[in-house]
Image (cartoon, rainbow over all chains, first blue to last red; front, side):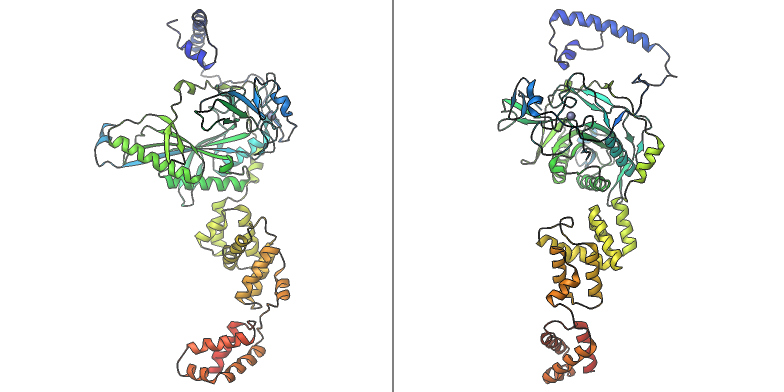
Length: 95
Length: 484
Ligand SMILES: [Zn+2]
């Protein structure tokens, strides 16, 4: 776990996924292996390769600026755990 | 920082602004929900902008066009290749738990905003993203609220972020920057730039450093400023706060501070630092943008003349002062109205006088604007022409102007209806002048005896007998002639 360049507890906090101590150990081990793969990749010479964020051979998939019907509010709020006065309602959040 | 603690060191601010602008598209950035302010909560939402699983965002072409046009108007370089990234964070204002934004490949880089003073403030970048939903904290304050209510109507509205270099030297210059930027955006029609409705929002990065040095100090990011006025006040407050801290040997910490307009102070938001790890990565749902030259050339072609260019041209072409030209070009449609009047009457100077004087007063009096008043440029041009031709007096012209602005009636019709025509016929005025001379021998004598004021009395008599309709210039001229 020592050679994992990330804090597993911080990641679980950011992802809002509470981990048990046992899970944290296990995932840390898995991440550690992932970092080894990345270290392997980093040894490759990629100076002649363009940065690639997408492998789909498509560019400029646009839609025209046209209005489409929105959902009825009742439908939009249907799956919300809680709502009030047409709003989604969540526990108090801090800015 | 040690040398900064010395006494008598004066500090200068270093300011950079991040301006968020909601684009005035019909629909949202990645879905077809209507983009409009003030609808009932959660009535402009769909599976895409609610972040439902299995939905796909599709880029609104018009939003890209608006951003590129803004970039072109500000002399930015439009990137030949650009992409969208996910900015990940957990906060319920984005139901997807990420905001689609642009991280390392923004649509434009470089460029500058030209201030009215002529100074240019360099830009770093402009990128495209989606706006977030709005949180309403129930209760009297956020801290006291038990729960939060969320409206996602704004989530997914196209949002453009314009980032300046930290080259702004004073709070006043920040205001000039905002006003110049706002003017350009409204001219090119990409946003309605209403700060009070949130379609133009501004955050500031500010630090201070000893005058004459070039290293940057530790900056604070100031948020929650809701008007140009509060930007100026917040920046002044920060300069004072940071200067005082450094002068008394304290260290400034890098932090986000909110402006409290009522108390006139900024305060630390004490946000958790770990929350700022946004883990950006390219959005796999969106393919990259590569804008071709023909499209860019067409957008460039469609750009209107920009406010400061128009101002400079008005000065050169119509002989108006820089001040007048500045006011005349504040608003694009008002500038176009002025120019139509100036062209139609052939006298730009007079057109400016009327627009900035009586027309403005009449509009205010009737609670109208140029847009809501029925007045047409041709009518004001006609008014200016008939005043120049001596058909009506200056006093009558004000009355006609008021009627034209309020009712949109043709000036000639107002003149005829109200009998405002001026008597400019030399023979007719001459007869009235002769009558006045005959009836007031004492005044004639006193004028000839050197009392110049007596002439005005005689002018008054002629005006009275003509019930104000005699052309006062001709009256005066004939009186002088007759009195030798
Ligand atoms: Zn939608």
